[in-house]
Picture 1 (cartoon, rainbow, N blue to C red):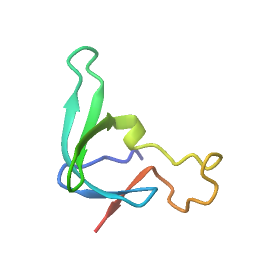
Picture 2: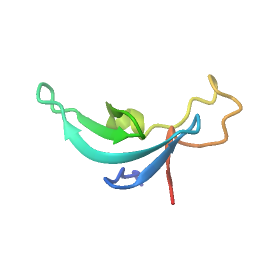
Picture 3: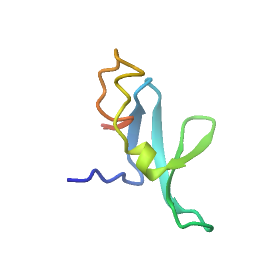
Picture 4: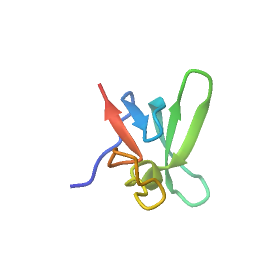
Length: 73
């Protein structure tokens, strides 16, 4: 089952910061799906598939989180 990233939900990045998803957007050139998210001072954008990807256990072997971003309550 594919995970769905939802607008209005908060997600923890595997390095610890918490972000709120504020939109799902589409690039006007290639129609690729993007996640628009914010912290307390900046707005960020990342490819949907990368936002939704697994953490790189080879690069970060001590990270416990399964996904790059995981939903928090």
